[in-house]
Length: 401
Image 1 (cartoon, rainbow, N blue to C red):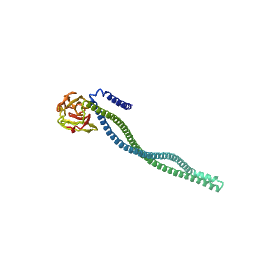
Image 2: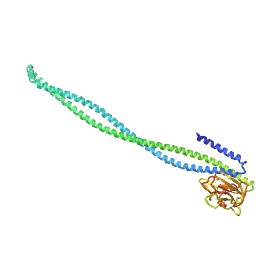
Image 3: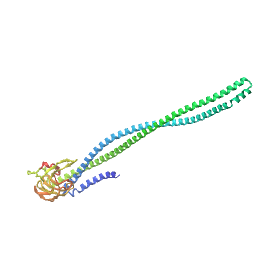
Image 4: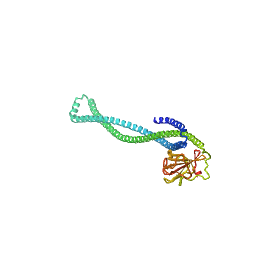
């Protein structure tokens, strides 16, 4: 919300600046150089910000492209990992279902074995009882049986019945024993199968857990990249929006700078100081003895409207030609500044001075000390910032020296 309010206030603030500049122009008509220098300084600052925004936009665009590729790869990896997890989870569910079936079968086999064991014990007990009874009671029983029989056929039939009962008891005991042995063997096989199935379930469960952990790590990386992409997109949008605002403001201020240049020309015309800007036959002398460390032209995304001459702090700055001082004082990034009108539309400026040696309205001769080298204003070290202007427009000083 604060950003929206700031954006809403920017056009109003810009409009207010323009109105204020127009309003104060008549009152400050005697000092238009200061106004133009101030506006030009703002234009230079905006151009630097625009260049910085462009560079930042390029970096963010490259980052977004790289993050986008990584995010696509991460999403594909998560989808692949999820597919693997789904397959393993299906296998695990099948293995656990098989284990449940084996557990149920083992319970059934255990109960059947226990029942067969009881039946076998009972059959063996009955058989043992019959054998003991036959051994103990056979002589009298057989004799009594023979005596009581009414016929020989009856004797034969009864003996056959007794033999049949004995054979049946033995057959039942054998059948129960076989069934018990088979059930015990089946139960043993089920126990072995169940043990293998438990190991299988454990192995699949471990693989599934590892696959889930890998999927979760990939998902976390995917989410991190998505967050980075969102932040980068937001930063890119903000950078573009801020750059568009700066471009609009710079364009508006450029119009103001042109208007101020016209004001300077008007002031020089009223003072009779207009012309081609050509130097006198004697030309301009070097204002300070030193090497040029920064030339005229674009520098760091903005226009450098003069040359920088490296001189020791306190070195006198000399008037490049005779003329009248039209500005002497502090001016923003120029620091302590002297501006001399030489007539014929030509003027020179001496910036970053540690102190001044002239005042406005003073006539100076060529070579006269007008200030002393310093590092005031926007300067990283002692030097003279020297400008040459024709009808208020900066030109390359090296063409005049």
